[in-house]
Amino acid sequence: MKLEICANSYQSAKNAQEAGAHRIELCSELAIGGITPSYGLLKKVTQELSIDTFVLIRPRSGNFTYSNIEFEIMKSNIKLCKELGCKGIVSGVLNSDNTIDVARTKELIELSRPLSFTFHRGFDWSPNLAEALKQLIYLGVDRLLTSGQNLTAERGLELLKILKTKAEDRIIILPGGGVSVDNVILFKNAGFNEIHASLTQLEKVNYKPLIPMNGSKHFNETHIGTSNSEKIKQLLKTIQQNED
Image 1 (cartoon, rainbow, N blue to C red):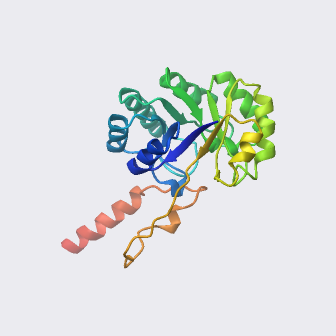
Image 2: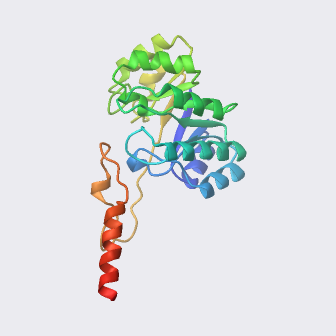
Image 3: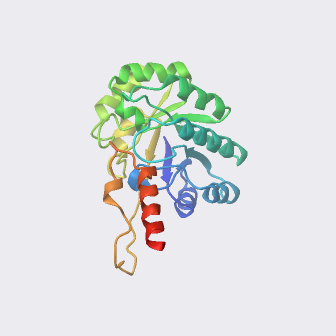
C-alpha cells in the first residue's frame, strides 16, 4: 500500500520523505481544506527533496466553481508545477450545482499531462457519485481522492468500497480524511492500494497572541469573500472628504 502525505509546509514534506512516505500532496492552509502552495515553497521542495510531489491546484477556499480569472490562475500554476519538476496535479472543477464541470476539468487534465492527475475531494459534494465517477473515468483521471462522501474516510468506508468496485481498476480510489495509525488496516483489508493522510501533530508555541488573526466570517464554504468595489470607493471618499 502506498502512502501519500498531505504536506502543508517544507518541514512536513521533509518529514514525509525522511519517514519513508511514497509521495506528498503539497498544499497550504489545511484549516480551509488546502489551497495552492506558494512559488517559494514549491521551488524549495522540488529542488531540495526527492520525494514525488503532487500539488494541489485550488486558487482559494470555499467552493470549487471558479470564475474565468480563477481558472486562468489555475492553469498558470499547473504550468509552473511542470516547469519545477512536480510529478502530479491534484485539482478539479465543479459546476454551480456541484456536478463535475467536464469541460474545464478536461482542460486541466490535458494541460497537466504527462503528469499524473488526481481529482480532489470536491468529488464528495457531487449529488450523483456514480455519474461523477463515470465522468472522471471517461476523462482519464488517474486517481480520485475521496472520503466516501463523509466527514472521515472511516465513516465513508462502505461507500468507498462501492466506488472501488465500480471503478474496476480504471481509476485509483484514494481514501483520505481522518486516516490514522488506528484505522489504516481497515483500508488495507478492504483492498485499497493507496492511502492519503496528513498525520498532523499540533505543536504548542510558547506564546499567546494578544488578539486572534483568524477571521471567523471567512470560514464559510457557502460564501466567497471578495473586496467590494463600492465599499472601497466609499471609504476613499470618506478619507478625501476629511482631508479637504
